[in-house]
Structure formats: structure tokens, C-alpha cells
Image 1 (tube, one colour):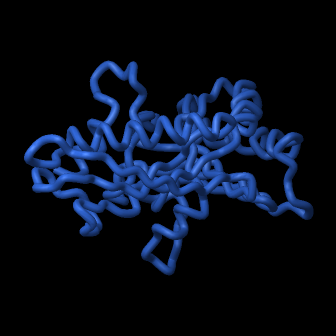
Image 2: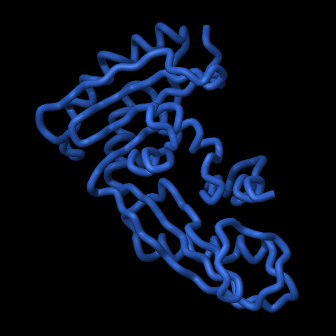
Image 3: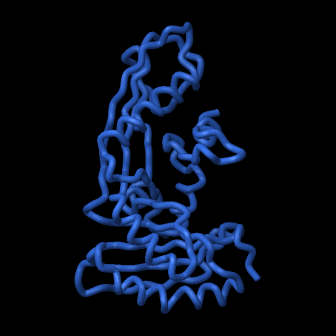
Length: 234
């Protein structure tokens, strides 16, 4: 039996292709993979082809792992995915700009996105630029003198109705969606010409991009909302 924490199942949905992977996180390799090329572009409101693809693969993966798939990571490529940049500028009333200032600015930026894009769910939140008193930085510097902190944040999101439809399909297999990833973003982050989807997906989930905010649910028992984010910058 393969212990569940040692592997991850990835399902990739593109306009004309489905792919599924059982990925060994310890040895960083795929134990199983399959794909289905489609003649016509998929309709996210009618995913019968996806159900058939899952019927043909879920049992095979569970037999190989000798374990049930409880969670899955979905990788989505769609022209309905949203890419939005939001800039925010915050006045600093203390001597130094620190992680607390950053947390406040990020929280306000996220809330601003949710207020204006209520039918979108965030997949990725990436800080593209930090500016302190007009000077740009590629990464955050803690405890630096400055009167103003400005951020440019890129949000990549998926329509909420897509998420509900995919949730419903996977309920049949008693599988919950653990995370959504944007395929276009994964490809952009890959520095290897031999692009392997599960490898870069695993890297992104584990903080490969130091400027991506790792969103943690507020009711998570052991971690604060931005704790993972701060670990990346420490």
C-alpha cells in the first residue's frame, strides 16, 4: 500500500485534453499517467467526457496505490480563467515597514479582489512588485525604513460555477478537490524545457515561487492565514 501522504493525484483539464497522474512526492516521479485527446473543445457545463475518463482511470490508480483517492489537485486551462492585477498603496505610521504591514496590505488586496470579482475563486495570488517609497524590490525586505508600501498583486482565478460542477462530478468517486492550479501559470514557472506537469505542480504547491501567497484557510487549526507566506520570506 502506498501511504496517502507519499503521493498526489493530479487531474489536468485543457480545452481539448484530459490528463491524470499519480505522482510519487518522495521520489518526484509519476507512477501512473493517462490522457485523452478530444476532437472538440470541452464545454465546462457538460463534462460527460470527463466522467468517462475518470471511470477508466480512478479504479486503476486506486488499485496501483492499494488505497482510495480521497483528494485530488485540479489543473485547469480555460479562456474563462481570470488574470487580474491589483495595485495598492499603504501609508506607514511606524519607523519601519515589516511583515505586519505586508499582511495588512495583502489582506486588503485580497478583500478588494473578492469584492469586485464575486463569481471568481482564487487559484493563485502572486506579488509581482514591492515598492517602498517609490523604490522597487523583487522580494520583500523586512524592517526597512519607508513611509509608503505599494504592492502589485496578480490574481489568477477560476469561475465559481466551474468549481461547483467539478466538485459535483468528483463526489461520485468520494473525492474532494484539494487545490486548483492554473496550467498556463505552471508552464510559465517551469524553467525546464522537458516540462513535466506533475513535477512543476508539486513545486508550486510547495512554494517554488517565493512571491506567491500560500493561502491557508482561516479556520486551519495549526497555521495562521499568511504563515506559509511569511516562511517563504524568512
